[in-house]
Length: 392
Image (cartoon, rainbow, N blue to C red):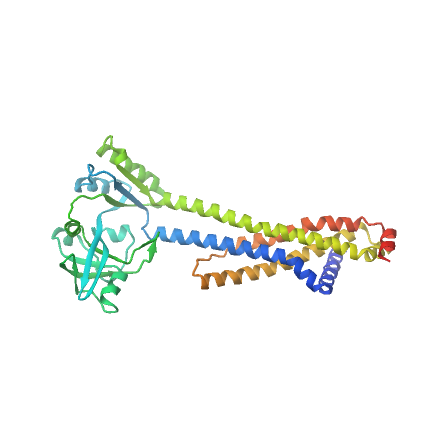
């Protein structure tokens, strides 16, 4: 009986909505805007979060970075070797970096140059699309060879294969032995507009043998905190009393910090958008109160022929929930559509989340219940005789 009563109330709710189409649409508008706003804003925030995480991951896997801040402190070959022998360290890659003038025929440009070793490709998760990467023999014999980033290769060689060709770095001829696969931008810096040379050759280009940056790759993601403490203890032993002259950065710490910031932003945007849902709920309550006033005679007749208070309460409450549910479903469709448009036309990262869509819809239903209770309760308390008189 209860199920049949609810079904009948739903039918009456749809009949009431159809008889007042414009008013029903305007009533649902607040819910529609609220649900779609939650979906769009949260999806943008989550898309930005995933994009940042992806960019950080492009820097390398299980990555630690050791930097020196003082010219008095040098990371020598012996120091780097000792860091590489730590139990939690899988690979070590020292680098020297700077800017060089690159020339090929009539094309000239300034490009970032990195001097490093063979382990760099593993430590920084760098792939070669053509040719090969630098080797330890290249470093030992100070070979004038270069591996080009994909953007650099396109700038100087177009669609042609540059492997085996020569370019000028600061006026000296270097043989191109490889081209890197495109990595895109990472934290605002292009990973494709670069030239990588052997460490010994890079030191000649930079005019200095000092190394201020070393990348370390941990063996396991779960042990990165242990590896970081291990590296810090080793550096403290190698450079006593100079802890302010160097720093150790854990890639996971950076990711955790960025994740915390983006999660806060997501909650803030979701909260702001949710206010629209509350405003929509107030609209529903207002229209339902008007509906109660307009249908006073109908309520009186139903009570006179035996309808109980709970039947009237259920009728108006279901009508309120139906309005909010329809608004929620339209809002979901609108949010998904607008999100796709934002992603396409504004070139923004959008990440739709099924739980967010579900929660926003459930929240719209809760709003319908909460703001529908007062009008429904008012209708259920009407005296049948007074209702019939006032509706006459």
